[in-house]
Length: 367
Image: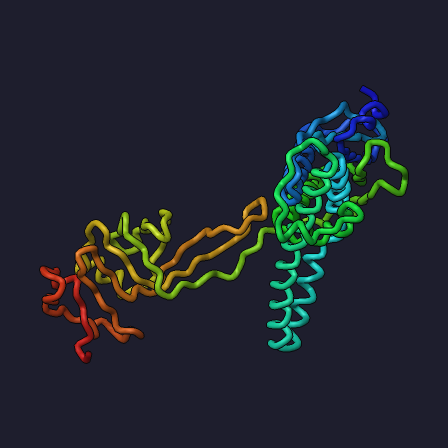
């Protein structure tokens, strides 16, 4: 099928990825090429998901002129699919605003704490605006699709759609800033350029929302700029939960014996305990565990980005065990802040909870 006949299809979008090769050849390392194609496909799918566009992606035979990859987006409505090609072109050729924002933030830290707090609030506001912008775009595309399909069942009018007056379809310029705030999209773009860094034969890469672009339609990024699009895995500030409850599944009964296992907020986690006083009592067998024993503790959750840009916990550390209890009601109470081991003595069983194990009930002798 020729490009001309493909363009006559009513519901089709296009994307061109053009690799410029140093030796003017049309041959490229297959592993590098397929790694790059994989990142582009994942990026297209993520953008489609964010914009609410259902589509199928097809690949045409490669073209020459260096090496050109042709992708077709097949779906129900041409407006959405055409927008998709333009948005992906913009994402892959836009400057990395995240680094610029990071530099501004560093400058504000040096200036004063008030400015830093102001920038944090502005950042939160921008994220909210991005979400609203994407929601508005999805509604606009859905309404355009309904208008294009006269016989299709229409969604009931809502407060969101009644006030939606659409003179023109959404533009790339309107959608792009919100999508550039999506960490997964930024990471997928980063991995595309990272795949090319070690392959010097590619001198530049171009993107266009059509297979036969005019010169002004193709956005070309030269090799010296590849590094600007690459972002590294980011270690994030840990989250502190002061009175977290962890149900113990597998305690570690010896010092330096590795990670404990427990259930926290409905999921099983592995965690370390850095509370030396509590660990000493465990090693001395002064703390007994039974089914349902739960720690009440200060929990630090360390976060990081994964390879796709998603934020995920990667380490759990219990810094301070405030108390622990079993299902039958036995409780160990800890003095806060701790002073020394002598601050804890074995108390008589509490009458209100039945037959408590004396070793499970610890009190402050001064209390």
